[in-house]
Length: 186
Image (cartoon, rainbow, N blue to C red; front, side, top):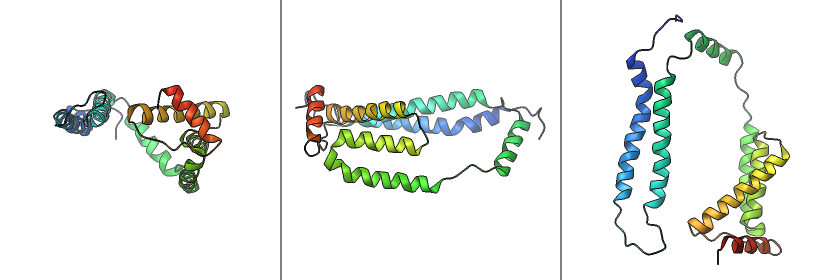
């Protein structure tokens, strides 16, 4: 490979094509979700709301991928690509299979403590453990992020999707009821 190799229009099309396919499929599925037939009831979202929300994210991701791929191709030098390939062969990435098993164990533990602690505290612990296993070691940031994740999921499930979550046993149920009252869930 020479470093002066130019990128052709065909190369750009090949790299962008998967994103365009995803974009087309997402657009079709959005159209299908837009035409769901259902009986509208006041104060409730229809059955197409969640698929459409996910499809909007899918459309945005595919559009971002198509545009960034179309403009990024050819910016890296071929010699740099060869050097990166050789580096990957000489020094393979570190793989920690025990972390996968630890995350599986944390998930099982989460399912076991969920009925006891309730959704909010159990999710804080679970998110904290997963971030710690992911080698994120800034204690204050991990703690604040765990609380924010638990609160965001609790809000989404209880206020948006209307799913009842486990409140836990005493004294943890008091925290769940206090948060539910603060969110306006009755």
